[in-house]
Image 1 (cartoon, rainbow, N blue to C red):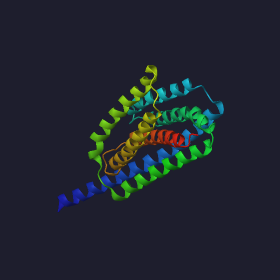
Image 2 (tube, rainbow, N blue to C red; image 1 turned 180 degrees about the vertical axis):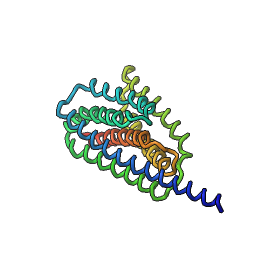
Image 3 (cartoon, rainbow, N blue to C red; image 1 turned 45 degrees about the vertical axis):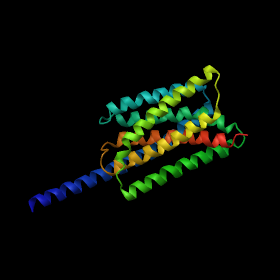
Image 4 (cartoon, rainbow, N blue to C red; image 1 turned 90 degrees about the horizontal axis):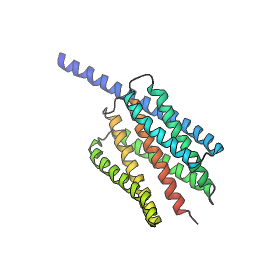
Length: 226
């Protein structure tokens, strides 16, 4: 009887701990998305050269390693805002380039709506079903490797005089599917208690949302290209 009581207490503590991680993760995620929107707006007004935007992305990427190292320290929270702020700032010139297109506002809003619908739909499914999608880890890692190799190839091909728009379309479609998979995988790990640190859980989900939006923007822009 004592063992059963002990197991019950531990189970309740585990549920409370998981619920706290879920609550903290989505609260911080919402705050960082708002902060990113602010820095993106500032960047759109300033309209920095694309080179600076790329530099902001690189700096943000480097910060993810620092955040991982400092995830349990007091510095983690401001580092997360610095990371998401840099990524938001990098969006400015990209959004301006789309807004300069015909139906640019519609393209951006469509991509934004599709991103929100995809994230909320997938998250709601995993949060309510509580299914374990940890088995997807290997497939997602392999998919990320393919995406990285494809990205290098797409960057190199123009130097050899090869320009195939359909390849960029296929690449963006693949990234959209991959990011959807990561959202399901990360949410499952949060719900099932695999992720115990809300800082890293937030960074993972934010990165997936960011990449999902960028490549949905590319797809919608391609389909609306006159």
